[in-house]
Length: 63
Image (cartoon, rainbow, N blue to C red; front, side, top):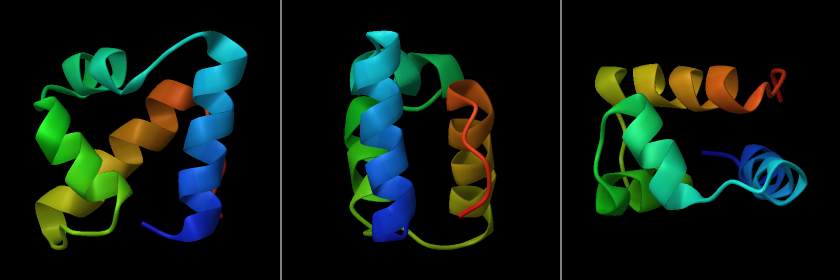
């Protein structure tokens, strides 16, 4: 995940009163997986799908 997208996720959390626990539950993964994705420690097709889901849930436009 790019720093720009990571920043947008943090801003979306702050604006919407949401957190990583909520987001992980919404997209169907555990919190440690989400943390790895947000910190750029996971890659691949499935990760790309999760990033798309993150953008959709938080209404983030492409970076």
